[in-house]
Image (tube, rainbow, N blue to C red; front, top):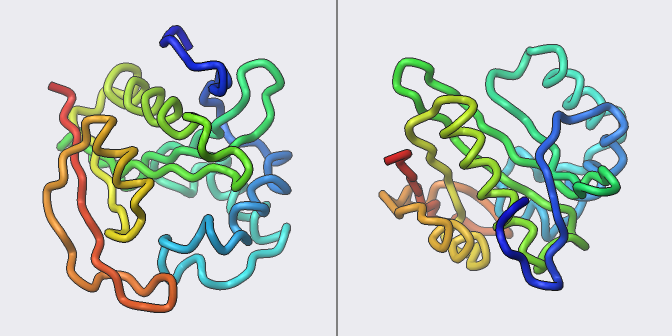
Length: 177
């Protein structure tokens, strides 16, 4: 990363997911705080075998989109992941998502990872628009996306059941231009 970084930030890179990332992925998938705002699809505990299947689907091309591990640039340690989901080649759009391991948050890693994902999506992958969804009560994610230049485009009212209640979901968008 060539951006200036504070002393608390680590240098990161995006790399393909690997089968050996499964134990680390399991840590965020079974962490209540990590999945708190992800909705019902992440409500049940996962096994290591579940996570291995999740990775295999992505490695075998069964998943449409791009999945990247957020990794320490020096040690290659898995820190989390960024995804570009539901790609529409004709429209040049994809839905972005990011999640970090619980102990890797609060150090600017998510902001760095999002910058790298946006750069890759608009540059190398040729997208012209990214969008993402965020639970309205996820204040840290709202700050992250707005600081990164994403614009709130709308609200899906009472859209997900998360943290034991119905919540609104914000839709954010970012144009290449």
